[in-house]
Image 1: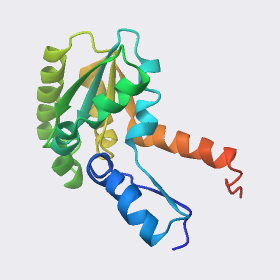
Image 2 (image 1 turned 180 degrees about the vertical axis):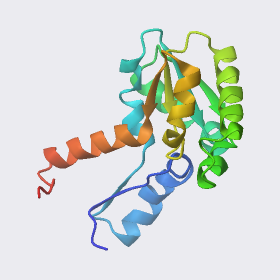
Image 3 (image 1 turned 60 degrees about the vertical axis):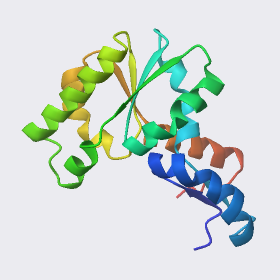
Length: 172
């Protein structure tokens, strides 16, 4: 389609396929193009949000199993402890337009209880799935003062900054 930059806007796909795309596929298919994921832009800033040094990551099973967030965050903030919780029911809830249902409230509460048992002084939670911001209302009711960070928002900010620096941002 002629794009010079493509964002792989899925945390699980970024965790599992981005390196292969960048190292194996892109050089053969479009060596002058770039593909970026959503994990690194968030990992580069997430530690700035935390006073306690404990960051929670809510993600899919695949993203948690990849250990991508602990590895990437550790590169930028070695003193930050990353506590992960897989939330396998959240995507189907959102995709079935059930994000405001009692079922959504049940699963959100259950997963948040689990993550806070692992790290009670978590003060920042990263929503490491592009579906999860649609649960912010339910999440906010349970998390209270804990700051919620959306990986998609942070990626968009990083991409905008990069495009501005490269003089590629179109205005209009």
